Length: 339
Length: 250
Image (cartoon, rainbow over all chains, first blue to last red; front, side, top):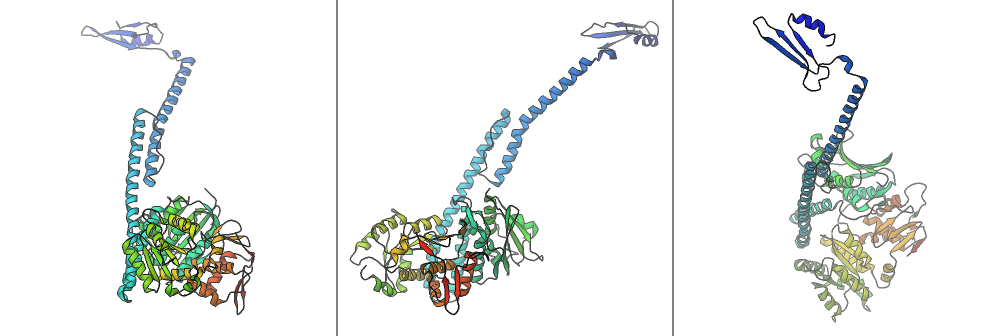
């Protein structure tokens, strides 16, 4: 019996007994019995009772090693499980912005693999749905042009006057809506190659055209700003911004370009009512006209076309307040080098 | 083609063939052309077009060809038409279909009008094309699509200007017409009146069309962007403007 037990035995009182088996591997090493006055015994037992010296170095080391091993294994397993999950989350986020995002690789634990497969199928269905709707919209816009062309010709045969002028204005507005819808749907889908393009020349043309149409519009910036661009797409996007500024804002409309480290910034500013900060996110979404504050007319595609162009070109479109708190500044940032 | 030059000088008698599948559209366009004083005939498709071309009435002075035709497409018709004649062809394309336009111009169309168009615009474009394509000048214009000057290149089919460093430089319609006029008459002083006449080829319904001086200065800003760039267009006081660069075609 270890010495430490002796005082304990003394304190238990007379007649108490303690049994000790240091070799017991299973069961109890310490068994004791204490007599009570009313007759009988209180029997107690303690399993694995061992003294401090038993915790030798080797045991501690092996325990630490084991703990480390378990921790490592858990981390690996957790990562094996969560990495595909995180990828799934990222993918869900990505298709929110672009239904054409790459499918998720189907790996990891069975359940996650199933989720990935189901997710990819869902993405495929969404993509098909969007494509169908897009095609329907494009076909409709496309087909509308023929009756519009006829109307325009027919209006030309009417006697000159206010009625005819109004009709022609309506037809022009419809043409513009159809044109913008097609521009929006086409953006990023045409196979126009990227080539070195003088952006300043495009801005100058747009400013001249707007000025010739009676608007107070001008380009202010370097005479040449060359960067890799899809020229026609860029012109389409920028002309939508200028048209918007002329239509919804009020003069003077200014087109500015400047080169900064690695990027080119274009700003189209007007002096109209601007767009409230809270509405700006919505303003970049397609088919959301915000015309209560900005003049009326239009189908809310101008900014969406430009935003889509910016994204497809590796740039960004942001809406800012005018310099003196009046009007709207639309800032298009484009990478100065090919991406 | 023997009677061509005289005929074409007199727009009023010029014969325009309208090839368009949409019946209403065909009627409206022929009516518009007739009211503008042209002789207009109509064809619904390629077959009818060849019938008119081979009829005793003879070759029309201008063919107005819709790109979107059932059966043989407008572009195919254009290619086949070009194999046998140089009759001026103006294409009707859908707005924004750049590929149609570029292909058409490369296949030998002389001009294009995007649908939907303003009636005035169509008439003016037809007049301008008839005036421009006298038989003497037409083959020359057709053969050389690429005109180079001082390192710059103008592709007349694509209407694209390329700077010496290879950057594509956008031109407005008026600027393109002005530049082309200068390139067709290098070293010759063009008066404001002459340049104004060039501008009339274009149709701008807008009443704010700027003066020639403004247009020339806009063009200059693009092809002479900074002080270091060589002066390509010079002002001749009291006379007009002259392109001083050496021009070559091909």
